[in-house]
Length: 424
Ligand SMILES: *Cc1c(COP(=O)(O)O)cnc(C)c1O
Image (cartoon, rainbow, N blue to C red; front, side, top):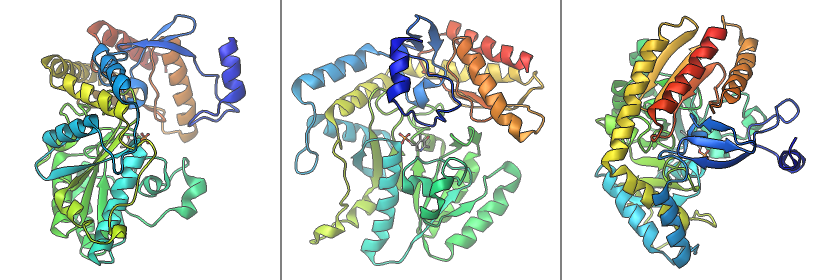
């Protein structure tokens, strides 16, 4: 064991980790494009985009330069009473990329906080208007982050059981599998008719953490229409789907009907610095205007609007404006579709599916639940051993690599996945 690793084990409490049983982590020294390089010099293809955040590849020179230049002029500053050019530029550009109804950007630090902000905005909107609307609707299997509000609107599962008593009540509608769509829409309509709902929050078109579960644009359009008809504020959590993951810049770009609030984070800075945005409709913002200070949105974080993160985000948007990025996204979408066809020939790969740059399937475990966990650990170890970073969710294997991944790396990735399927 290296000295670095020994010190890690001595001092660090890692996220989502059972330290008694988990293997020691791999020490990563460097990253470039789609590759991670460990302390022994071994390369891994980052098929996970480092927790789904990296979109243009690691160490992109354009983003590096933007951060370095920003650091030379302004590192960080209070964001209440003061402002700065990069936050202004980023806001103007994000508003320009979103549908016309969006026109105010609120800054925070990550996906969970962007969701907290969205929920608080929706509750306070009704409070300021003098309505008692306190219910929230979400979809079973949702994941919106690990803070209390975000956990409350997420699936109640093993990950958050110790905290369940402290969550606020949420009405969960079932996951909209194709056969149940109309039944679920009826249920949503019946609930909304109570006029008690402040908001509806969804991961648009694909639920990430519950296992890359895809549902239809038609369902989402109908659900959003019903909500809007009943004056329920609609929040799209695009923390995962934003910035090209679904093949378009935002998942809402696939939809006819648009939300009132959208949350953005993961890919926002190109995956290099933490930053969250909650973008709201003007109608929402107006409800916070008053002579009374307490009617304003009194929320903020020390690092709100951090200039370095804003500079990274602006540089990432520059890259989204190029033909090269669009071409890369389109190629990756095509490769995923071809690979999905190939995977369908493997009986051990169930529910093979793609959504843009994401490909997922389940390893058939013969329905044995306790085996799920084992197969997850076995698959993860196989991938690491073979130089690929893939983090299965239970028995769901998925890839969502940086868009810069070259065809050779993609082919290698495929081979490692197919080897696993041949061996189970
Ligand atoms: C990852 C994720 C979050 C939480 O973001 P963090 O930056 O990890 O706090 C929220 N919503 C969705 C849909 C996510 O995928």
